[in-house]
Amino acid sequence: MVNWYCVSSMCFNNFRTLDKNKEKINFYKIPKNKEIQRQYATLLKTGGANMDRGHICCEHWIDCVRKDSNHLPEIIVPQTQIAKLNKKINIAAKNLKRNPDSTSSKLTLKTLKKKLIAATNANKRNVTVHKARRKVVKHSLKKRQKPDVPVVDVPSTSDMSKNSEIEELKQQLKAKSEEVLHIQNKLLHTEGQLLYTQQQLLIFKNLYFSFKSIAEDRKIFKYLCGLDLDQFNILMDIVKPYLSLLNHTVKNFSYETQYLAILTISRHGLDYRFMAFILRTSEATVGRIANSWFIFLATLFNEIDLMPEHGFLIEQMPSSFVTTGHGKTDLVIDATEFKFNFASNLDVNTLLFSHYKNHSTGKALIGIAPHGMGIMFSEVYPGSISDSEITEKTNTIHYVNEAHEIMSDRGFSIQDLCSAKGITLNRPKQKENPQFNETEVQRNFDIASTRIHVERFIGRVRDWKILNNTWPLVQIDMLTCVWQMLCHTVNLTCPPIGPKEE
Image (cartoon, helix red, strand yellow):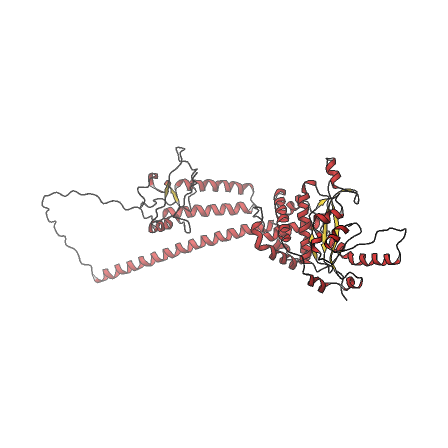
């Protein structure tokens, strides 16, 4: 279906408009001739419109009929449009009378009155119409009599000078009139810009939560999103080239405000309904923003190759690892768990139940380098999975070079995986006797003092309270995105958490 709209800036007719007989009005194509298009644009005040594809309604001609393609419009603003403007003015006046303090009603009434004045003035101007055809005059064969030549008085020199002065004054008056018209048009344009600025200012004042307003107070900014302004700007510069991939159509908020909102939700574990109240929008809109950003950031950050070169690990190896005999360690791993709501299905509960937490949980694996930089962040698996199984499923051994070492907690029974690749597993010794001997105590202490930094890294990530909430089962896939996004956020913005070198 073709959707036509009148190209005139002061006409609101479209393909749905009906005439007095309840029938759709006719539309005419704008001619392709550039000179005629320029004349159309001058008459109808349609600067910047696409005249090649434009259409004009029939109400711009007397009797609603255009004689041919060169027939210029005879009516600038149809009386039907002026009637519509008067009706809108009456409605706006009633609204203002009901609510005298309404700024938007005042602005609307003021704008409509200006449009009515402009439309009325447009119709008062002279319009260059299609030239009438010459009349056909029949000549008789009779000899015409020569008319008497009238006696013409020759004007005096003083009369001629007066006539020239009058003509000069007329030219000056015409120039001044054109100058006044130009100033009036410029004034209308300036008032329109002022009206738009006032409307934007009104919207900005009603929008309490925005990046521009919060960035002015750095302490409040860091409290809300967990990052200082410089760290936030670094992440924004990273993701900015890929923002076109965001899968939502929310245009009411800037990208910076959206990013700040989802970081605030994550930092404080806020409900979407509460954030919707702060943003002055709906809960569904906040949900679309949050879900799109979580998936987008996790997908984008997971493309970063965090596996370091072996020479870099040796150069950054902390002295505490070397002195305790673990100087060949490539990776330190640990697991963390997140709570889920109990399911009505017993099989699902069995799959998710963790005897360690005595609750339905999900489990994720994390691995860091000895100096404290994050290297791998796994997806979230059901809570019943063992540490050994999750290590095998995530292919964690891939991050350790042959003949080197991996460090873990006591629960990671992955000797077979390590032996198959030729790497050494460093973990605290199991208690086989009633009491550890002195050597075993010292070895366990050395491993614990160097392995503690992976737990500190997890602690940094779990400072974002959204991970400590009890999650609904339907969001287990979203939990993976949130977990990986926050791990990368901490990894990119915070210094390595490894042991401090003296």
